[in-house]
Length: 285
Image 1 (spheres, rainbow, N blue to C red):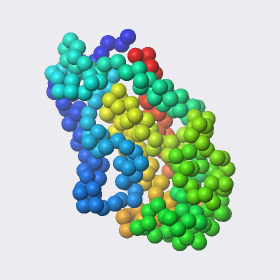
Image 2: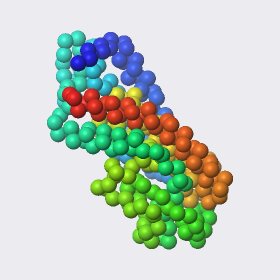
Image 3: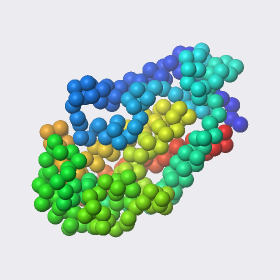
């Protein structure tokens, strides 16, 4: 077993403070919006669809194999225990092992597949296809309802992610080249999918506090940047918020989307590997 790393009081407090400063650039704006009842169609998703509260994102944890000197304040959380020299995470509770195994199997399967870069973000278009119930009703559709429907009908829909597909409108679902279900998530998920990249943040915080907050923040930052592309390529006109559209209804727009999608595949790969390695450590105990 690898010996635990001992962090001095000044060291771990410095890391904690740096983490808080890093994530406040995301958590402070959402707290301000909530205080005024303001909604943001792009960034609120990171705190509504994903259930990790801003206060939890700000909280710093060192991850396994680290002893914090003079850190009795961490004993208020049951995951921690006192050890010679300070405080560290205790063993993973048995009831959380199933989650760890699922995350490892899902991410390992996805990591072993070739990225699929031909979806062009049409999942957001399929969510409003032939429907009067628009998810972001405060924001107009760039091409209007008829133009949006025409885009959906003009190209194949290639969504492999169940948690995007389940929001398709009923007329859009048969147009998808695959019919994802929750039960075949491990069999279908692939690293080119923007939602799979964003979900690395979900799988990271699902392991909280048995995951370093640095890794959680890295995954959140990736999810933030992917979400921007996700909505720039959507049918909504978000120019008033400063988001230039990626016009996937054109050949140039599809090429731009695929290029940026590929860059996210590269950024996500080492984070996926770090999560897989963490799961392996937690499984061993």
